[in-house]
Length: 322
Ligand code: AHR
Image (cartoon, rainbow, N blue to C red; front, side, top):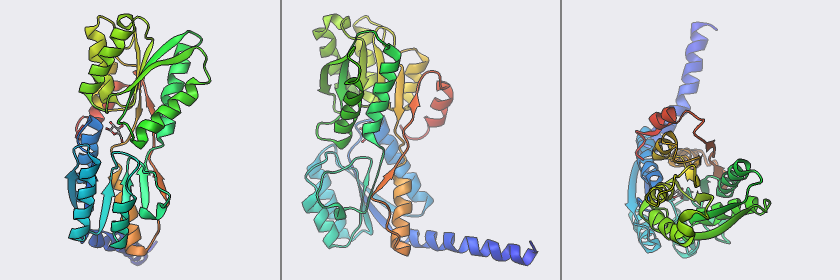
C-alpha cells in the first residue's frame, strides 16, 4: 500500500469513530438503578459509570433502594428532564407499561439492563441487555447433577428478589435440570432478597429445620452474596461449607473466588457487570444511524470452579467496584 493509500484508509476508518464519539458526547442518559443489594450490583453501577466516561456520555444514576415506586418516579423525572435515553434495571418484572408508555410518548428510548419485564407491548423498550438467566440456573443444576452423580442429594435454595425476572428464571432453569435426576430434591426454597444478611438469616433457619444441616447435601443460591452469607451460617453451625454442604451460586463476584481458595464453595456462574457498554453502543448506533438493535442483546454466562485459577480471576475482578 502506498503512503497516500495508507493515509486515506486511516482517514476512512477514523471518521465514523470520531463522528460516533462527538455524537455520544452530546448525550445524557438517565439510569434507574435498583440499589446496592449485592457486590454484583455495585460493580454494575461502577462499570456503567466508566463505560459512560469512555464514550463521553453524561450518565445520571438514580438509586431506587430496591423499590419499584422509586424507579417509576425516577423514570418520570428523567422524562421531565428530557434526557436522550433511559436505562432501566427493573427490580420486578411486572407493572411497567404505564410509565414506559410515558417515555415512549416523549420519544425517549428505554433500554433494559440485566433484568427483563413482562409486557405484551415490546415496543415500550428498544432492547434488553441481559444474560440468559434460565440458562444460568440450568448451568448451576448441571454442575450439581454431575458432581453428586447417583447419590441422593437434598438441596436448599436461596431465591433472589420475589418477582424479579432473574429469580423466576434462575429457579426455572435449575428446577428443569433437577427434574431429570430423581436422586436430587429441592427440599426448601425461600427468598434471601439477593443480600448477604438475608442469605445468612434464611440459611440459619434451613439448618435448624434440617437437623442442624445434616439432611442438606447442597445449597443453590441465586447470587453469590446470599451464598457468602449462607457459608457463614454453615460454619457457625459447625459444618464445612464446600464439603459437608456443596455450594453453587451465580454472579462470580471476587469474594466467591476467595471462598474457592478457602475450599468453602464449589461453583459459580458468571454474570458480567458490563451491561451498560453494549447498551451505549446500541443506543449510539440507533440515534446516530437509525440502526434498530435486536430486541435482546445477550451477555455471556460461564461456569467457574476452584479449578479455574481463583487467585488470577480474583485479581482480574477486584478493582471493578464489587
Ligand atoms: O439482576 C442481576 C442480579 O441482581 C444479580 O445476580 C444479583 O447479585 C443482583 O442483585
